[in-house]
Length: 197
Image 1 (cartoon, rainbow, N blue to C red):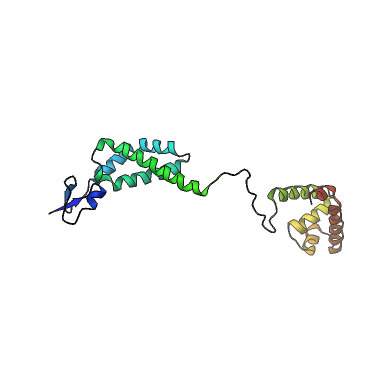
Image 2 (image 1 turned 135 degrees about the vertical axis):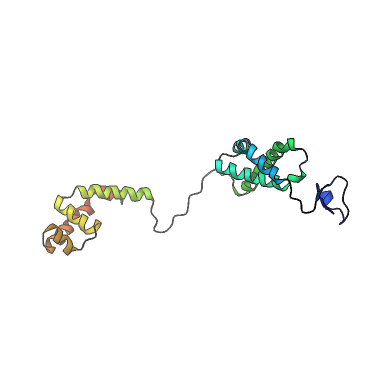
């Protein structure tokens, strides 16, 4: 018994049990000629990948494009009668797939005269402004006397308590409180920090 294999849409529309004269037949249970597809892909993949790369700017997109075109070729493998036309078939599949992708993407992307500015997120400062403030703060701290600078760094950058800061520096807690207070006053009056704020 033989099973009809359609080579066109008109063959698929034929009534059950009736085959068209141009439809090729394959014995029931026989495996398709897919080993020849695998050998074709092994032999021609580098050339076809170069074609795909010429259609896209991104090498990864080119690989995806080639895989899609080869999948389409695989589905149609037993309908391709002229094996010499395989490269042309795959190239046409590459081009059609790329055109289809381009059209779909074109719906989503459009050019405009001005780039839209992102909406500011509450509490999210500009990173450049944050960095400018950070740099200005470090310059202002570096202008403090050495002892005040050490206390400010230990209290606010190292997050030590007043007692821990006093212990590290070998001074009293009261000395730390008064020195840090004077240092913060100088930082508030620093002209560079006033410009950045």
